[in-house]
Image (cartoon, rainbow, N blue to C red; front, side, top):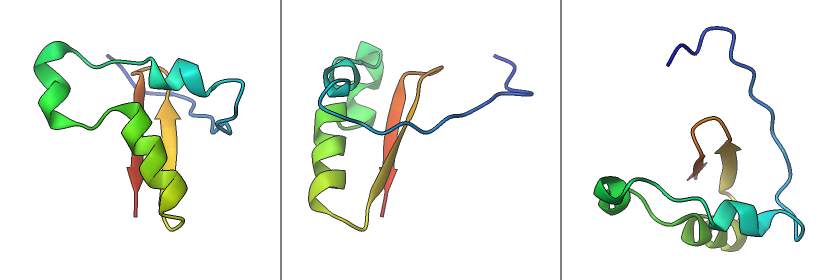
Length: 65
């Protein structure tokens, strides 16, 4: 995949769109590498110093402290 010129937008996760995010999945062989999106969003909600993003092109959600 060529990422040159890629545009990233940040969007708020709301009651209207959170299910789309929790329904995203990684490949079965990658499941042990990352927490589910629901767990990641819960971590970001309860740990206020954390922030989270969704990269739609790769269906990835991640967060940091």
